[in-house]
Amino acid sequence: MLETLADDLQARGKLDLSECFIDGTFVSAKKGTFVSERPSGAKVMKLMAVADRFGLPLGVHTCSASPHEVKLARETVCERFTDERPEKMIGDKAYDSDPLDAELAKLDIELIAPHKANRKKAQTQDGRKLRRYKRRWKIERLFAWLGNFRRIVVRYEYHSDNYLGFVHLACIVILLRNYF
Image (cartoon, rainbow, N blue to C red; front, side, top):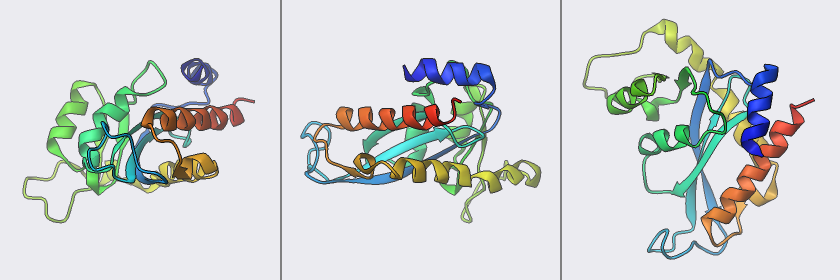
């Protein structure tokens, strides 16, 4: 249903994949997690999301909190709700990675992220592309919209698949608000 809704919104022109944003946030669990997901039973997981130009959700992904966001970016992009790929992906300094840039370039996605202060290699971004970075607040707004659903803020589910189902349900509600 989520894919059908996103495709219909894209056909109506209410989803714009020309400029998308990616980020992640931490979600604390009330009772811990399922043992096979994380041997220590840690109480924190990471929620990754991709938003379109208007801040509407395009894809979400959950995993344990230990991997860095750069390693989860490709999986998050692949778990999008639409068939088309984003043209430009905008992220914060955490996404300044040449391997990630090359990996997304294979998918015909241009990565735009400001360079870290301690970057050793030559710079790949110029100021013209980085002007888009100032609109990155839209992914933060998506996390604020998701935060309006109490079931998403704190993970009460023992299994991460159940939690991801509630996140998808919240994304359906957010997309339905922009449907009419």
